[in-house]
Image (cartoon, rainbow, N blue to C red; front, side, top):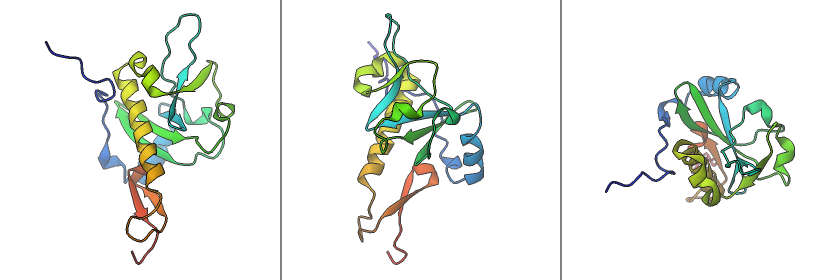
Length: 164
């Protein structure tokens, strides 16, 4: 009997690697009203609060719904014409204070809500979590120890030491 695909791996979206080096396209898409941000906070994803028996859903926001310095934003990919970016809010103690929404939201561990949000949303949330975990572990060059900086829409970290 065939099994359903893992909901973290069956996203059905295009990671669009060819667009990661196109700074003009990325800047335009970040500000586009159709684009969505997948907020992360300390390895937790933003979801709707469970209330009155309503199931929790992924909370993907527009860029203008999140106040403050954007910090690191990573391009995840696109579904049709909608671009998805992840944004790490881990440096802020109370990230919900930065978010404007008419719906009550909370940050939750993906393992708790993943099966509830559907394949594509769960996959985008897992991708955001994984890429920020990778960034948190690769802030310094493995060869010389100098700091690294993100490039190519957050998918590459480059050593800042010119002689390395």
